[in-house]
Image (cartoon, rainbow, N blue to C red; front, side, top):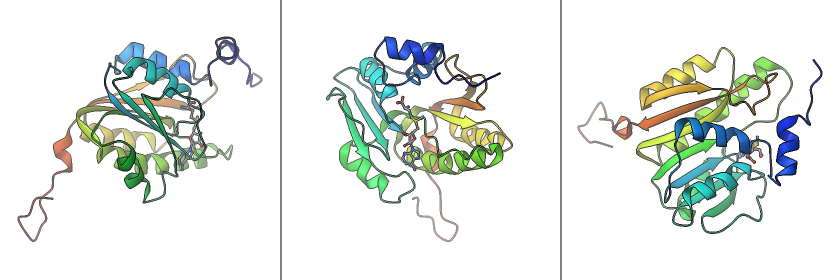
Length: 211
Ligand SMILES: C[S@@+](CC[C@H](N)C(=O)[O-])C[C@H]1O[C@@H](n2cnc3c(N)ncnc32)[C@H](O)[C@@H]1O
């Protein structure tokens, strides 16, 4: 079957003036898992061109906030609740930049991060998990107890270990493939709810100091 970039969701997004077809994915995940609520603070990693942010902004309203981070500039979003940050998630200073813009903790975090695709499935999957591991650390340090994390992953050998990692930090982890995600794509979303914040607390081996 030929790859149709301009499929039904693409045309719907054009017709409805959405920034990207990706909007329909978060919309569907939200209608299934009911994650967004008025007044929430949300962090989005890999947010350009801002399709998800537009949707989340409506859901959290002006009393909430949505901080979207990307390598690329995101423009023309309603503020409040939207704020944007041009940054590389792989840069160790990015966490401090986030905190300077929005005071943590966040009620939820979403990641649609997609590294540059090589077309080689195993490489693309490994790159996607590597970037997600960093995203997860950044999120865990800033997520409120009971918070949620939704992230895009590519199916392959490394999905299961990542899913298990999430399961140790969140009460519930579900795999979901929204209808707007192309059937030919190996992308799938992990929806993790009920963050167990106490997992970050650890006692060092040679002292009784709690970090
Ligand atoms: C599929 S797009 C996100 C679409 C977005 N959710 C929307 O609805 O408009 C993936 C984004 O991840 C970003 N990205 C990839 N690697 C990144 C990195 N190291 N740091 C920050 N953003 C990155 C890309 O620039 C790209 O804009």
